[in-house]
Length: 174
Image 1: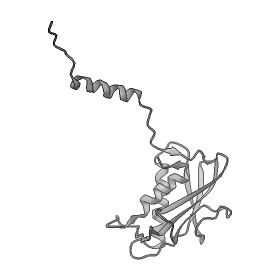
Image 2 (image 1 turned 90 degrees about the vertical axis):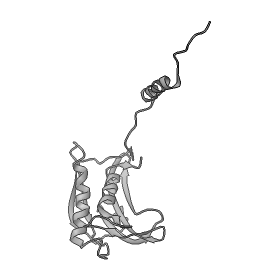
Image 3 (image 1 turned 135 degrees about the vertical axis):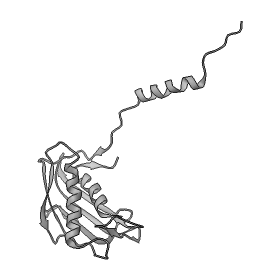
Image 4 (image 1 turned 90 degrees about the horizontal axis):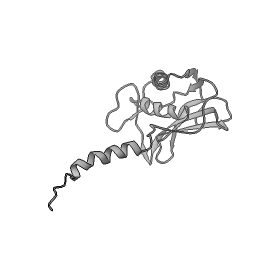
């Protein structure tokens, strides 16, 4: 008895993909820190102290780029959430006791980070943050590019600030 089989690996492959898609866990686009703000208003101040080497822009341009980065998150959610710029500060670095949510630049190298945002909280509630951009990473100087499109090895101040404001909201790396 000679039977011709209708089974072929090519006909079986779409079924494998369909089964995998149906059985796979739902993918999430982000991880959270497990904390959130108690209100939809997040106040902050900026120390526009990036050195102006022709790339990072004037202090006014630096403030504009950072506030635009914060404001971009409002456009991405239906939540009643907004970052509120309260002006300039002279504060630099991380100080969770000063009561000021600060964005600043530091003449430091902390390894492989371009910037770090430290979020402080009590249990599951965020109560403050400080965001610091660094002058170098792994011993290599960071050229912060502000008002123009980044070129070459320049770091996009607005793009990286937008990423860091995501951490302020309680988002972690995925």
